Amino acid sequence: MPVQSCEENNKPGYKWGQQGKCYTYNPDNEGQRRKAKQYAIIQGYAVGDFAGLRVSFDYDDTLSTRRGKDLAQKEIDKGNVLYVISARNDKTAMLSTALSLGIPQSRVFATGSNKAKVEKIQELRISKHYDNNKNVIKDLNQKTRVVGIIFN
Image (cartoon, rainbow, N blue to C red; front, side):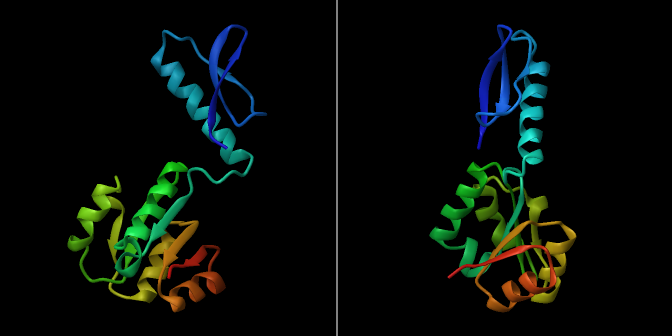
């Protein structure tokens, strides 16, 4: 459910979904408007919706594909925060794709191994990770609280 506009006592506001509390603001105050919207998003977390989750993608044969980029864009559209976490030794070649999706360089990681990749996913408290490597997905699903999704 996305943030929705609402009105209460003739004041505009934001709420999470149809049933959420309406957080009102003074229409002349941009700071109040941003804060009201932020409260509505926090309400989404409180009710357990998935917006704002940390989601990561492997690079090779995952985010590097058209399908992977489309899936990443859908995750961004949901309001999720994306990371690129690869077993590559260097992140340089991954940066243009990440930046084209709006993923900053600070959220792109080259870990050097699949073991280190799984550890980085845990360290960053990723909620969902897409990868084409079945062993990485198996490790995530068995040893962590991360939802590992096989990409093929």
